Length: 437
Image 1 (cartoon, rainbow, N blue to C red):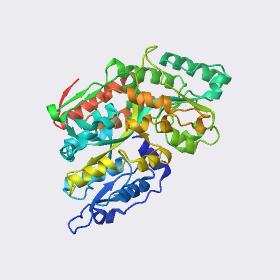
Image 2 (spheres, rainbow, N blue to C red):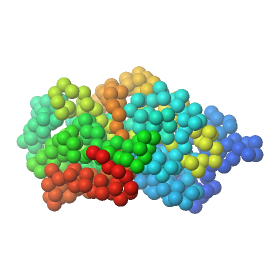
Image 3 (cartoon, rainbow, N blue to C red):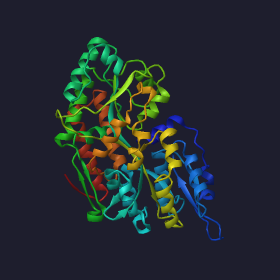
Image 4 (tube, one colour):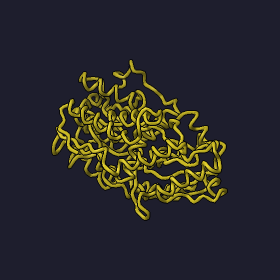
């Protein structure tokens, strides 16, 4: 799950073309001499304005937008439509980790056949790598979630606790925070698969590997590598010692905890400024952003939590027109990015948009005037390649469930990844994959 998913859930109220009317919202058109009509499913916040901007600037193609639900709700409807062979939109918003799932279902058009490879240099390299497989372009990147450490600057300053630059210093700060305020925690372990994945990514862990182009029936799963284990060793120890809370993210309780001084930090993402500015009223101006702590002093490893794309489904009636929509709804559109940055608070994966001083140099009142994108942008620029499995929702579910067992005391933290590895390998083999570590 990622930022756009949660922002949409939190803000709600997006216009919905009812499910019974999905067929009426579909992507026919163009035969009568009028514009080609392209159907789009997406849950981006403030997306109506983006659609309106596209339709105003294109006479030959018009977008009909439907919000059929966020994240898993939309994916369930897509899988049903793919299985039935009908009912899918022409263009669908899909998070990065879901792309291999829909590739394995043979549900996505290769947009490279319709000119999409021309966009390669527009996007952050890591994002383009996840959206493509060789010359095949399965998705057009939109937003991401480069990670950094949000922290209560006022409390760290007041108590003379250094902002941690390494994870060892983070653990030390956790103990010092508990000493000055027994009711406080350095953070909460939110049992969010995407967040856990981002922490492992930042640790140098690369647990998955998959390429349909080279071996569609082979997958790499290595969740027990040392770079993965050390994340759970550290976080599990903090939870067991009572130095880290166990509250799920994105609940009323979690928001209240962030806004009350119960949590002093959050390893958050580039879409976070928009979320927190709208929900944390009592502590506005007291937070700051620092680079993520490193596992080795002086290192520069980075991770990402979340991100999404546009894909064209094989049920598209006009794949070329649908590819134009996927490429140009955001892409180079200034009107779309004005909305995406200033209303929807997306983190842009278009390199020129992210590098624009209007974004990088934006001062956030919530962060007491800090230009936090000066931290997030270099993180995105430094992110290396990271692959997912064709069943990533199962993997994230396992990570969540086994972590929840450890927090409940029914499982040692040291076995979370071992058990997840065992269950994921069994699942992969049941699906017909050959598994390598």
